[in-house]
Image (tube, rainbow, N blue to C red):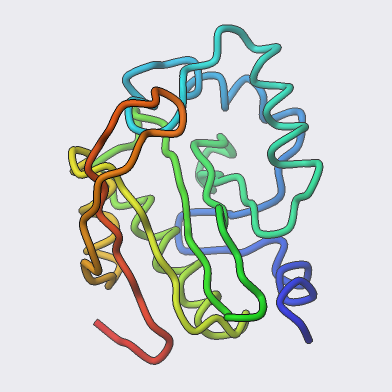
Length: 182
């Protein structure tokens, strides 16, 4: 199977506490809970102004081309609390980059680490990727902790312009390779 057939096969992934599944328009209210909060998104993208913007984002960013994009759902409540996706995939070189966001109400519970670890195992195993990266703003200590706790190693620090604010920032690239256990 090629990479995209594998992604389609694993459209839903389950962990101990989480269900990673495709997005639906019924996720709009839960997404707006975090996407409408500027503090929750300080290092990622501008906060949504209203739920209509959230519905548009779900349709255009997650449902239009759904492979490699998962809603993170807390199994105990059924609440959608975040997202995790391949922001970059290179089938030829078998590399990828993960991006994620979690509702601030659930920070510090190890939920994102659980999602990243599980998806990394699939990516570097069943999906056949050789290398997986996570890029975080150097000031985003929560995201850096998730990468480190998920077995990623610091690969480089570099300066680049934030794609939304156009402000020069320092970023850290964390990398995990197939067969690398930590």
